Every structure is written in structure tokens, then in C-alpha cells.
Amino acid sequence: MESLSDRNILFIQGENRPEIAPLVTRLYSRLQPQKEMLFLPGARAHVMTAESLKDYNRHVANFFMSNLPLNPIPPREPR
Image (cartoon, rainbow, N blue to C red):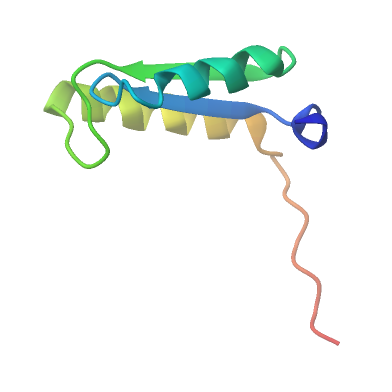
């Protein structure tokens, strides 16, 4: 977990996966403040309502827009 302490992390939890909720909650609580939790009511791994899908898309896009550099470092040329 220490190796993740300087990174912004988005946790996504679907309501219909109660067996992994304790693990997600434990991981979330162990990380420093640069974290977000997206809880999707009624969602499963591969099935979401239209409203949940909109929320998911909006939240994930906002997370990446907020946390990625505006001027990404270009890839290095192969040697």
C-alpha cells in the first residue's frame, strides 16, 4: 500500500457485489487523502442501469481530467 500513497486512486464499488465490499472499504481506508470512492447502486460487474452508466462515465472522466497532467510527457523514441 505504501507504493500507492503518492497516487490518486479511484475505487469503484457496485452495490450487487457485497462479497468484495469489505475489501474495497479496507483498501480505501488505508490510503491517504488522494482517493475517491464511486458507489454505483444496482450495478454489477457487467450490468448497469442507464443512469448508473451516465454517473460512471461522468465520474471516471472527471477523475482523469482532474488527475492527469495537462501536458503529458511524450513517449520516448525507441532505441
